Length: 569
Image (cartoon, rainbow, N blue to C red; front, side, top):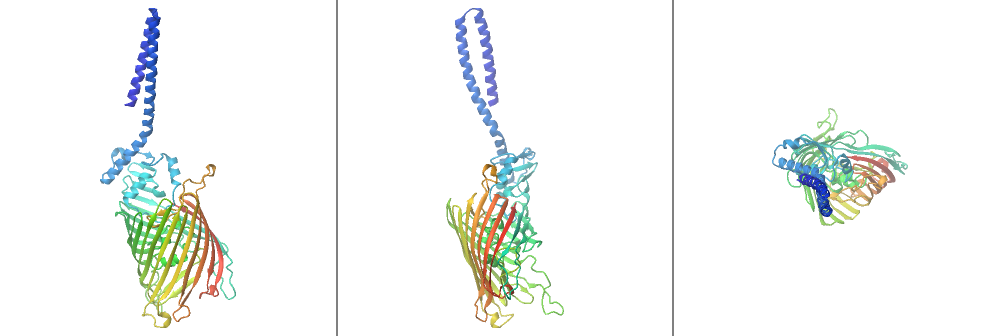
């Protein structure tokens, strides 16, 4: 319509100008100068008026053409949403569309794709567990390439192939953590063994490849880990589970999984403030949770609160060996009766604003039936010095004649602008049974405890925020990817932590346990050039009281310095 109006005005202007020329010529032949001059003045004014109208129409036409691609994309997006909601195939005109550019994004073209991919927080180290509607919303928001009835994009920063309606999808991710560092001042004293405290060591801490398969609200995740443990090459499974996310803000999970318990354990390892969790957190979660634990349960989240509970069994690979007595040897080499347990966590934000988040919560975990292994029911508590470059465990004790194990404790957190403070305390109780020993040393309840306090400050970049899907604090965000030429440096944060884990119980009594007490003072700096990469540097000062291990008969102090390179997709 605008084009036709502009054309009509141009033709009218040309016709009037021609008429003016003819009339001028006729007037000249009649020598009527006055009439010619009056007619010329009138035609010039009409021309100026029409030129103004043409200019206005041209501006309107330019604006309409500028917004036309967005309108087309918006219409295509709406058609896809309507078709998907009604379970209908995509209209043929849109199915043939080959388009680079987000349907609701702020930019278009591959340059915008790369620019947006740099920004935000790191992707999770786990498989996808979002609902179908959330997945489609993320897909519509991110830049994507539409090829026939397929769509290729990076929703959440993870390479994903899906049908155009989002019903079928497959994504693949990466959690790549490689550590290098060493220990200082850990030399043994007279009568001690040295322990594994190299001055320079390296470790492939995590090499996970999360792979997710989706059909509507059903998601299957499988994540192998080629770097689990304290030494390179420890290949294992991190997760293999089935999820249903069709209920509002709820995910039901069955299979090998990491049940969320404690605030630190609920965070993705790509978002940790320090390279490793506090010692007490790892001790507690390993009672009946931890990586690749057979689990069944659900989590639910809202803007102000988060709750999850799981029934758990044995960890992946823990049933190795034979549960039968070896011929001629009075021992067993495998699990005869698997463990059964449960976890529960509830957290909330009683107050929140633009600059403040207050976090409170409580976690509980229990192994109400400990696995029978080697002909007895016992459990070993052990933990390293909060840096995964050694196989030596300062904290270590085995409790025999175990009936059940439980742990519970509160968690607190506070964010004010760029500053985050948080801490947790946990008490561990071990009840004894009466089926494998009646001596005083095998009777009575055993009690352990531990706690930590941490502080984090974001120097530049987007400060840490609260992640309602994890009920925990998320990593800093990158507002501008690393680009020194334009004064952009990504995000940088400083962290500090004080951590205590105490595995001594009732010392000086017949049933006393000496597992040692470990205190770690930590400081670290984390740099994010963009959302997918991070560089970490941690310093730990380690103080350990005496325990029963040969390398710690008299207690030992020392230090560690370690760095990590991280990639997350």
